[in-house]
Figure 1: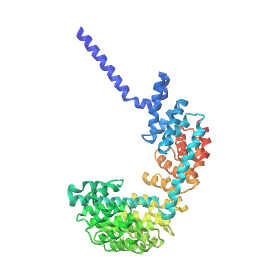
Figure 2: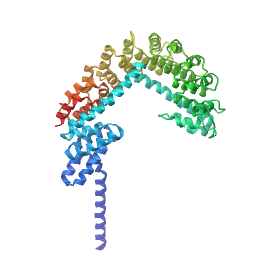
Figure 3: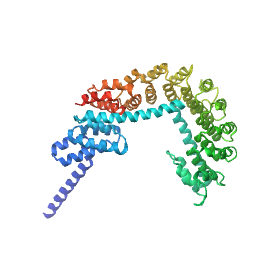
Figure 4: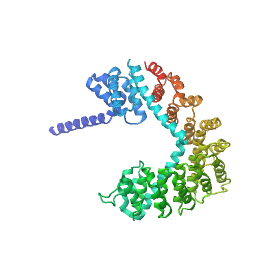
Length: 513
């Protein structure tokens, strides 16, 4: 009998433990989505504070959906959550200067009477931050006139250069250069790693400044030290090193020459143009010629344009691609016709192209982005033809969509809208067309973007584009606050908070009272 009791007791314990862990495993979801209900059931003030703290932490981490849900749940706690959120907003803003838009949305959801003052105070900060960012962007555009699309393409070239250098070092030096290889492969470049590697041959009491020692390291017997020194000087934009770097470009072994071309482009000094042009034409390897072409684009001297146009006929695709991007970055209209010729000669007809190198995907994408950057007669039509040509590779068509968005041509907007509206097209292409539409400050486009909020396929793109549009999008967004769909209203409110236009404050408060 005692054995039976023992087994019954054990079974009871196991069931109790199982229930406990089951509740523990589901507690996160319970806290996130049932916070207010839990409090209603328990009436425990301590638990309520814990729930508010938990939900507030979710406003700072996790994905967009998690943050929106947390904001909505916090709203159910009313004044208690509002007090906690005010403290958090003020603390975060004073310590980091950053404003968490999800926290402002959560505060709005509480319906607190202080909403107008809190929103007004923080909208002023958002606007000031936005205006400062816009001024920087305007200065860059005024100075360079360069779109994010072509800058990203050039950055991809730079990453490829660094990866190839790391591969060369691994092949030539095995484990001796692991630190340098890791630095070259890193997404975020860290000059201090290049510095320490390049200076590792020197004694601590070596005379001279760091720059002087890095220039001296260019004469090291070790190719890896020379590469590290070149990368360090390039990261520092050290113009004093130009005269020591240019000879390396013409008489060193290939990876070091490539590093020199890369570094000269980073420094951006016009004194390097002549030697870069020479190496772009006569460099022993395609990596040297390609890096020289990219460097010339970064320097931006228009005297290099004829030589870059000539490289559109190089026998290597990587060089043609780099030359095209640099022509786009410089923006001289004399490049339009040669770039159009690249697209024409590389078009496949019955499976064949007049020029097989121009049929290369990267060459075509680079020429397309360059044309979108420069613009001019016939460019919109040429890009539209590629965008709508289903025989072209998807990545090439996506580049055409991005480029059309950069032209600012009303005709381009119509083509992009047609592609976006075509449900038979690839979803990625339609999304790219949607993003490209968002580059124009156009009320009609803003209304189209607002209409797609909450859409599972285009909502995220629409949100990004509307924030980028800024003031143009405010009126359609305010109108959209009248929606009966709570999720779309929250999405709309969040975008208005991100934009920070004061005229949205009263409509926001009315929408959440």
